[in-house]
Image 1 (cartoon, helix red, strand yellow):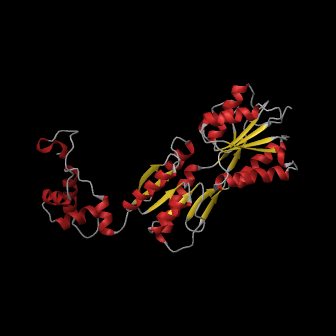
Image 2: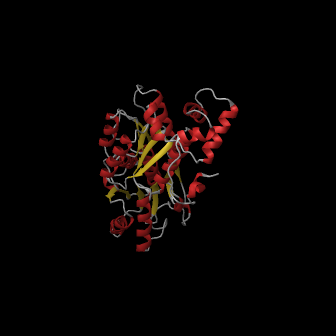
Image 3: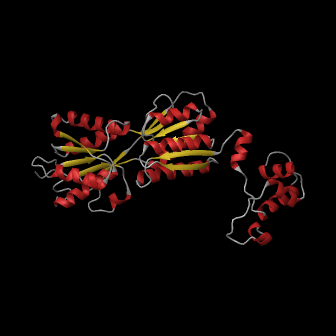
Length: 348
């Protein structure tokens, strides 16, 4: 009989959690025998194990993971901090993290900091108090990684890197991918190419800017041929900035948007001004999200496998837990350029 219907307690009405002691009493065994039967550690005869498990099921017994972690000084929970779950990139990243945690026998505690550094630190403090086995995060500063490492908690930075040499990291080849996209645009004959980017101080933005400038130089174009425009990571605000850029007499014939948010802003700005893609404006971007193949023409983009990044980050953390003294390791994953209909030779 289910515990929620016993002793007058109705379905859906909160009730006290069953304890191991209650399970042992219901099964007619000692507390230590019940513990061995449910944890699998130590010998228990098959019929006793079945009886204990049946009692646990009837009482809806759920092990207290926190108490077990405190007793054993080990945790099966991974803390995860991502920047913004409204962004499809971070959704895919969280999906990869969750799947691999589950495969590895760990639970995942997820926090979305919404792009606010203070929230990131608050989440880190919660993870410390919860005694997580390790933390995987898309950092906004070096501070949080150093804070967690100071408590002996293994850290893996994903997507961007602040604590190089202090902790493990999983990133993509941002410089190489940005170089390839810009090189392709220059190869089509574009002589005024704009990079629209939200930040140039983190490793992601810095490396994408570096690859962009290197490709402009290698194409034999003057530095002013590569126009760099910065904008906040907000579609409406970025659209206004990009519309102003595209309204100039010497407006670029191609735009390379540094992420999917800025790509959407560029698409909307071009539509607002009546500029057709790719006839009047070529558009390429970072982040291959779903809408980019749903519009016409589909968007030329750099595809980074966020799910695989998440899976790799969990593997990195498991290796760090297994070998805590090994040197910090940074894994750089490849990103591929998907050429579609949004880029073409300039008509002016």
